[in-house]
Each structure stands twice: as structure tokens, then as C-alpha cells.
Length: 82
Image (cartoon, rainbow, N blue to C red; front, side, top):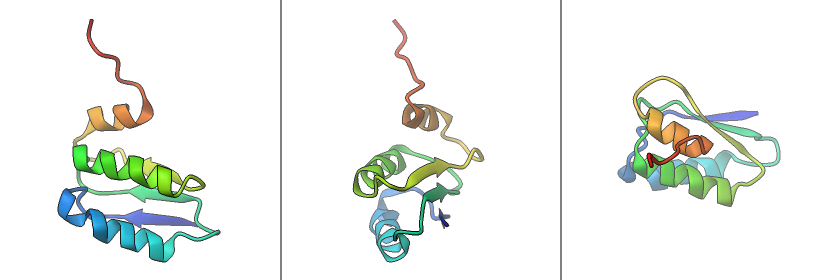
């Protein structure tokens, strides 16, 4: 089973997203997909917090929208320029 989060990944929505996940994430949910129009620093922090709170659930960020650098950070693919 998968849960889709389609709210903007902005700070005002963090608690609403968390409450939705707490209501839906159970033994059957294996993936949470963020399909928001964009990904920002608040969203990245939320995803990291969710991975800690729900370690058995995979988190996926949909490819559409801006926020490629945050997607890369989440995947651990960004290297600082030296």
C-alpha cells in the first residue's frame, strides 16, 4: 500500500502531513510518495523526520516540479564544489 502526499511541502503544512501519515501509516503501508508541486528545505526536513519516525516506510519524491537539488540531497548525490 502507498500513501500520496499532495500538499505543498511548506512549513505551514508539516503538522497536517504528519497527522495524515499517523492516521494512515500502519503495517500495510510500505511507501509514501510526495507529489507536491515543489520541494523546498522545509519539505526536505520533513522527509528526513518522517524517515526517522517511520523507518519501515519508503519515501519517494515525484520527479515533477522544481527542487532537483533537494531531491539529490535526499538521495545523497550532491557533492560540494571544491
